[in-house]
Structure formats: C-alpha cells, structure tokens
Image 1: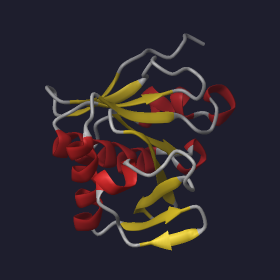
Image 2: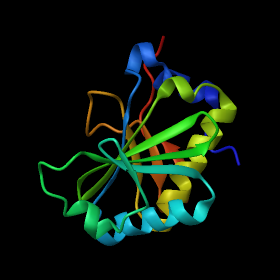
Image 3: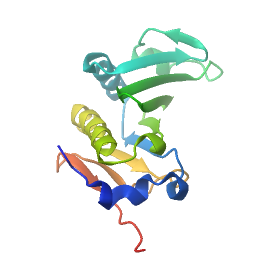
Image 4: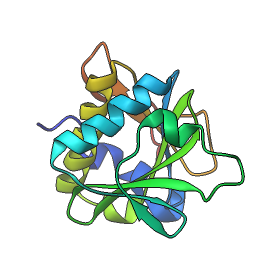
Length: 161
C-alpha cells in the first residue's frame, strides 16, 4: 500500500539535509501504550533484541523497564521491521514513545513503504499519531501516521528548489 510517493518526500529523507537520525515519537503515551508496542513487536514476526547496556535480555514488561533506576544501564529495544531497516526504541519516559531510525536505511520507494507500514502498524495498535521530526528540530513533524485518515501523511512541505 503506497501512502506516500518517494518523489514527494525524498527531501525529508536526505541525511545531508535533514540529519541522518530523525526522532520518531508517539506523544501522549502511557505505560499501557508502551506495553502494547512491546506486545506488537512480540506478535509481529519482526526480528528484535532488547538490551540493558551490554546485557541482552528477554522482552520485559513495560512497567518494569520504565521503572528502572535513573543510573541503570540504558535500556533499548532494537526492532527490524524488514532486513536492513532498524528502529531503536528508547525508554526515556512513559508519556512518550521514542524511537530512532536511520535515513540512510530508508532510501527509495520500497524502503519508504516499509517505514510507512511500520508507522501505520504502531499507530493503528495505539490509536495515536506517530510523528517523525527532523534530527535536531523536535516538535516540527514532517510526516506521520494520522489516526483519522488511517494512513501516513505528509505534515510539511519541502522547500521549493
């Protein structure tokens, strides 16, 4: 399902212009939303790895990982929705689900479709928007899953060249 066309969004996926690591987020989240994402990852068939520091561990419960002491090794969940497409979830706070992707892995229509499918799957499960902000420009999403439209949409226009 082609939600966005590469030609329309390529500017926002140019690592030289936008930075290579945009922030992807689900605002207005709660512990149960984190748990829903963890459950989704476990059910999806996606390859994944959860680690705290260097220790690779089984998938945790959201409540447990979000209640780790501040000085604990940084927990992260690595998810591969497709070969060579990696999303890294960071457990900074219960109120927002954060993950990073690498724009260098998301070049071309096929990879864009994988990324849109990933955002759509998370957004549908949570019934919440999933937004992508350029690296270093937090709070200004350029695209994201729109709950009402039930698809990934462009939220900003690239500059006229």
